[in-house]
Length: 254
Image (cartoon, rainbow, N blue to C red; front, side):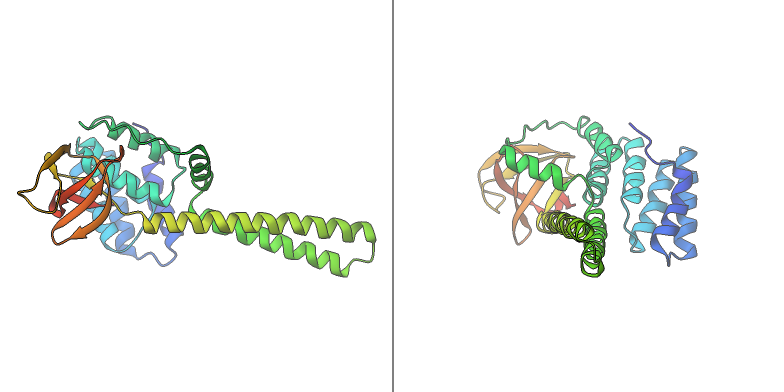
């Protein structure tokens, strides 16, 4: 398992990232970092959780919380928080590596359905950066495009005007693509409902009824896609495409 960011610098990052970060959550992070460094992982989990419950979101926070659970061999919770961190920063190598390690520790090894090459390529491109990073790039490219348009308008030299025009077109095209990637990432994150199974063993049913036919068995730590909900039951799909129903108390939504 990779350590990723230095835990001792994490509190400072949170302070800078949040701007209005209060003294109490900052102190909680510092205490959580110390507990983690001292190997008191139960205290680290409790303290990091309090920061989350205060309303703060950051991939580093979720990643450290996942690491704290991993150190206790609590792989379902580790996977849950790594997945939440990945949603905020999908291209982060440390998050993806530790998530893969945690997934290797659980019982279910489900081969995913293969994606069409262009869908796989497009998703890989969108996941190169976080949603916010794509948005920042789009703003930068737009500012550069407007600067080049201004140069085109005010310059009297034909060569400079041509350069300004064509450079502006390039930056405008880059703006369109980065906006598209940012919006695509946002839509995917907010439209994709997934959960992690927390029951040690749970039977997936053919309908939202305890007396319905048993389809297959899942174990703790397995990720499922949430398709629908009726009463206390979720309709779920696993990576290989199989669909069935689980009681909502058997899983936690990512």
